[in-house]
Image 1 (tube, rainbow, N blue to C red):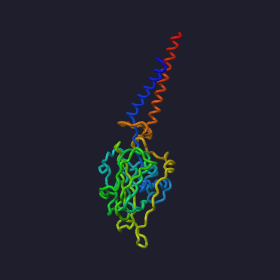
Image 2: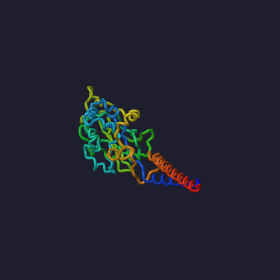
Image 3: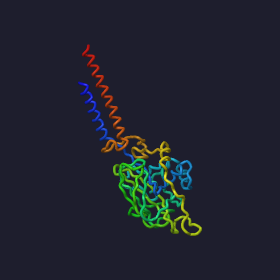
Image 4: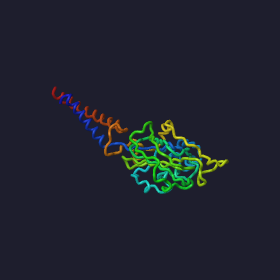
Length: 312
């Protein structure tokens, strides 16, 4: 066999291996939370898991430890498949019925709340691992009582925003518009992100304050009776904080976060995956290259043996 034909064989084998790998492996990676308005878990994480500032965040750490905050982007159900109401009972919406995040369900009026007004609103979702799916945002009804556990019936059936999100998130965010209705006092925005390429879904609760609160469950009234005393305004976690705390997170970005059998970096089989759309591409290329090098070495060794036999 000539050197040219040997090289061609190596190329063909490498290409075939790469094609097979690309068609049988992909990554399942989608994580994040709402940062405008700031979700409960994002607000507490931004304060700092080790030294939270607001009383409710201090109580959360005392009850659940710091790990739920370091895993702020993983309030999920791996096999939701659109069955949100069946899987999440009343009173467990903010935690997605997961014990790890149960403190997020506390019915309190001191959760950090974002000040909002009726009308057009720009939502921002921090996506640490973007993927295809639908994000739907619901708002509570005017009679919502924040001193009571959140129920499905507390939410307006018509969403204030719904958008299809893609495989990429510019600068790490999904940004889209919605319309907030007329409300007064403390309300809550509930986000469901159902992936379309996986049964996995993510959830978040964001407290908002429209001002001019009604008497029921609206929080303390100022001395002049002009409205409620606002809870601490929340801040979203910065990119620097997220990067610095990444080693403390137990979230698996490849696979369904929270699953004990899906450690970070594990490849998850899918029906198809395009090389270059995620971390899969470089891994497939490296694997194919390594196999190709090994095959080339075998061909060269065979050529040396044949040459020795001809000379002897």
